[in-house]
Length: 325
Picture (cartoon, one colour):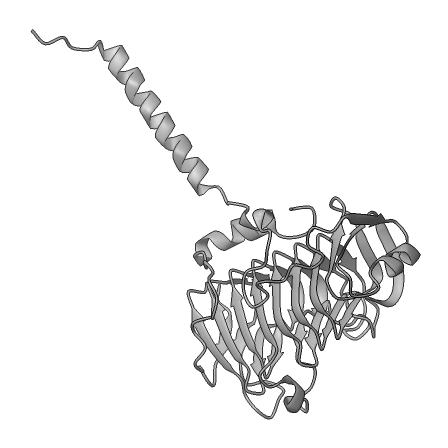
């Protein structure tokens, strides 16, 4: 004789199973803070180690910071607190600069990486770099990782009062820019500073941007001359012109989200020679595109996982910026 479970028991079991399934679904739907777990860069900057496992030195003053980042020996320098400066501080090769907590960094100026290699900049607040200083300048340098920083200024002044938040120039190469926020600025990130610099830049300026949040940044998200750029899983809000490929540059623009943006991607502005851009899987949010040449760059020479555009807003807004590692 078959024994039937009481209806109340069956209903309870069904409810429990449904609750368990719902809980699993909720967990799976939550944005995964993958950037917080990154211990090494993905993209063109792969292999950058900075100071590696060197014993960290913690600094609280500008003078101590300048001393700590000088030279090419392996070193890890932790910045504790917000340091005011004017102009830029030069950072030596084989260096990691790491902010302590969520509110450490620099205001009024920035950092310069000039003719160096193997530098990591993470977890800093870098604000209001008064021209001619950039928040970070990467110049004639290779193997750089800029990760989980918060860059900002304001748009109360004219567009030239502050300079760039992150500029990569003079044939720099193998750079990854990941999980940063860029806010309230006119000129975001310039890669290649001049139409006349082909002899130095051609064959270089290979840069990956992923999981960055550009919020109320007018343009240069990024602006790339001559080089090769991979721009994936980024969130852009409030731009006039976002991705700008020019002077023969090759851009692969993949699985990004654009909101309140006039032109998401252009290849035909401001320079005598157009750039190239391939688009895949983006959510343009009504933004226009101006693609005069599609180019050939569709398969970056490194391993990575581009998440669907539908996941980008949640993951980037929860995981990008200082204080998230």
